[in-house]
Length: 168
Image 1 (cartoon, rainbow, N blue to C red):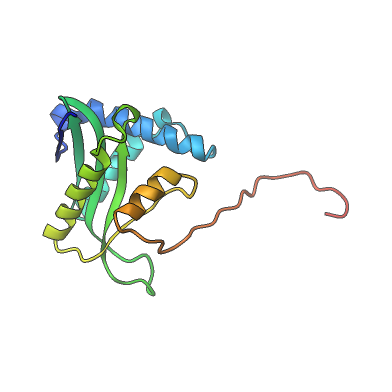
Image 2 (spheres, rainbow, N blue to C red):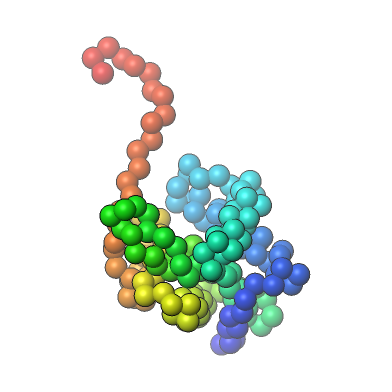
């Protein structure tokens, strides 16, 4: 089994690998939630979003490498504010953990999670949160195995126009 190296993102070295990972990740999400745009259509904006989140919330992008090849990435912010006045405590937030399909079930996600947790702890975080698509059963099982528990649930409903029929 090839050893997994987790290191900080380096723009000069990793730009194309991160771009490819984001496209793959977004396309996986789209396969579970068709309303999401294609990875290719959002990659530039999404990467800028992650870089901004890191800059504003004391974060970093981590790259996973196996035998010199990009295997995945994670984005962790060490200090994000609570979302509302009734949830005021700051927490660390994992924006993404993604492992390319060819590298799954090899411990890459566990290595990314361990480094994300280490980063959060060394930056003073006491709580770590993340979001996951409800239909992503494999990711949900992995996060549960790492000690995460359900905290909030976001429900969604499409409001697409439909023809009005008498009696509706």
